[in-house]
Amino acid sequence: MSFVLWIVIGGILGWLASMVMRTDAQQGIFLNMVVGIVGALLGGWLLTPFVGGGTINYDDFSVMSLLVSFLGAVVLLGVVNLILRGRLR
Image 1 (cartoon, helix red, strand yellow):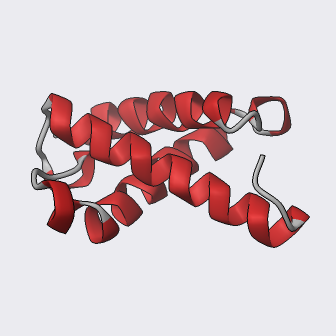
Image 2 (cartoon, helix red, strand yellow; image 1 turned 30 degrees about the horizontal axis):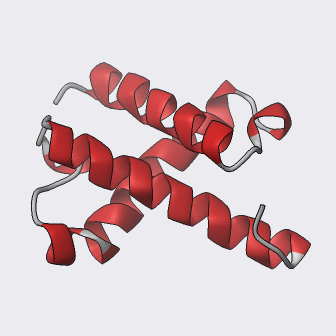
């Protein structure tokens, strides 16, 4: 996957995850991209062994890779909220 496409898809997935976790008003576009890309790494490390498939970081562009990357971003935001606020949103 090209670098630009990787950044765009990571930003979209980070934005969707921040909307699910209700942190969208606190984050800008740059932080959404970071959350999407780091969440994809986290999803690849934690979720891929259980559900199979890859993530957007491994040049795998499929529905399963988008789902794993999105779930990784949601888990990342949940952990950050738990650490910073002491609760999940």
